Length: 131
Image: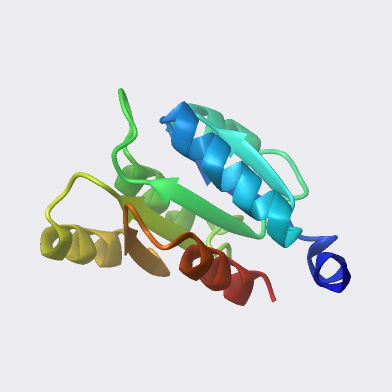
């Protein structure tokens, strides 16, 4: 399919600690031709961000536990001159929506979304950042 070409040199890093949801996101990205790497916690995500090529997009669950949550991870990414150019989409299924939106903005997120999100809408947003 033709849409697969446009993301060949792109990579989305998905940071999500729920295995079922992570698998769903991987499948969705696969269907859209978006190459993905995954991390189940912030520590692994940061480790992945030490190696090049850097991902072109981060999709991060705010409610990562234990240790560092998605907001803190986003902040770290945005505070680092090496990685601050990488768009970060934060998502949550737990925090009260309005509060989370504020926190996501403060953390420097490029986009904030609430679970369960419309899968195609999420893919569309990811593709926007990857283009």
